[in-house]
Length: 477
Image (tube, rainbow, N blue to C red):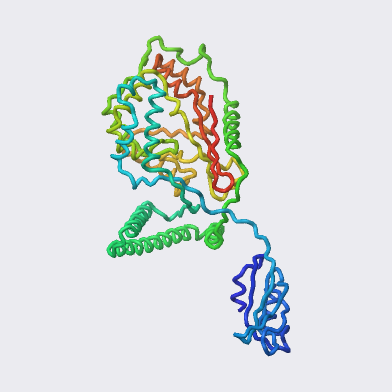
């Protein structure tokens, strides 16, 4: 019994032990089980006789609160009485919800041809579309795509467990997991024995692969840390005592916007004043080199759309992969909007919106410290910082490999190391536009770049009151 009781926590978590102990009547308070239970802070609750012979056989032990109003009611179907009592349970702190609301579309339920035909039916004819002002034409195209998706594939909300990424989960295992889930959906839909056998085969293989991956991961981790006691301690501590989920933060979306705005202002104040027109380098070129941006052919637009990585922003009216599929049907409208922007020197306002989602740089950091957050999904392909399975070692290996490759090709190498804080955010737009003029860019070509930089806005989503997501929109000058 002592082994069993030692498993339970010794804090204020409620614990109750009760049953037919049948202790010696004359040694009720000195028997071995009672003494053992007392060692584990379990209080014995006095009770009237619980057996028809007048003996106290059924006992109740509680922790941390004692039981009150103990009564024993005789039963005609048993020689033991019915024991009733009242106990007050402590109010435990509410645990943080480990589930998030996830809004998604079931894209497997629609056909691209249906999306294309529905969108085209809601658009005006091409001649009427071409006569619309650029912002109106763009809004019309995007709203048609958005309404089509809402009609054919409406948003649905599901609950998803907020779990951390497994470091041993490779791309191969992720692909196998997708195949496993696909096989599970196929079997649930068909109910065929052949599909069930296929699903079970994939499940067995995936379980073995995951076990093997975990074993290899921790074996390598332990071997590389064999000479470092601190690292070994941290590894075992993370396995035996995984970190608790972060506590809810009192930060708001406005706090993030203010923090990043003030951060950029502080960095810009450390710079020297931007050069004036009289001292700018090489002055404005007397011979313009670019006055008008060239229009693009429909075939070129289609090639660009299909060659892009189909990443999707929540502000997009349609998933990028779906747009790539139906782009041939919408190509005249897309090409007209693009060329209208290039020839007028104006970037549609709807394309100058961004969405920034703050996430912790590391799970162990304090979520109440606003400096511990960074925007998401902005990793470059060669970035190693704040990236899973990357570190200073991977960055050093990548640089060393490029140096060796250049040397093998008998090329010279120049390595420039810079540590810039908020490098892209601190670019002075006036200086940038002045530099473009000095390079000979003028006319509607220069106006297009100026329009792209002007009137931008961004949104910051933040969770409040459980799963309620609140959006704040901030406009940039």
